[in-house]
Length: 246
Image (cartoon, rainbow, N blue to C red; front, side):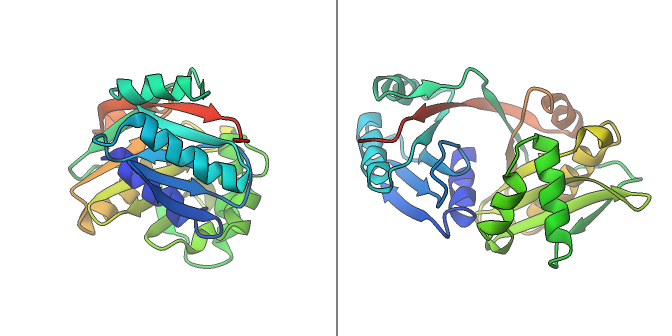
């Protein structure tokens, strides 16, 4: 469910100038930036019938060729992959990422406006707000330089009130499931409902476009916001960073 949409989203964004390759049991997405990050260089297990070790061997082969560390996304219920990732040298991130899902339309704050990013004027606005919200230096450069705003199937959105841009988020449809990513609000704008507004706007749009449900990966700080909107828990993800293979 969520991992399939996540894999397709990463492939559609940073995977376009990088390398996207199916491996036994899943997919490998290698970006043009050699950093071990789950949205840059990552492996996604989408077929649990294939043994986890076979899937991980496929990932190792791909990332050995590109010379980059990578992240293995592990669903919390996937004990086989969890054990195999550690054996394969993966270093676990001790912060689980809650997975959440909703299947019906939501109601957001009425006083927040949300607009899609449709031109080159709004692209740097989105990129700056996203970088400030996540406090990740270089994220704005990444979004623009890797052509993420031109990714097919992705809707980028900005929330604002009173003429001030407050926060951002994007939605992606893989044809069956919708996914919400890069929801970010800079510290000075938090508490005004921007994250809720952009999430509702994107989620309702994905459902209207034919998605049967919408998923997202929350932070522990953001989980209560999504629960109040109507999202329910659907497990969690653990991330294992594997050094660049020899």
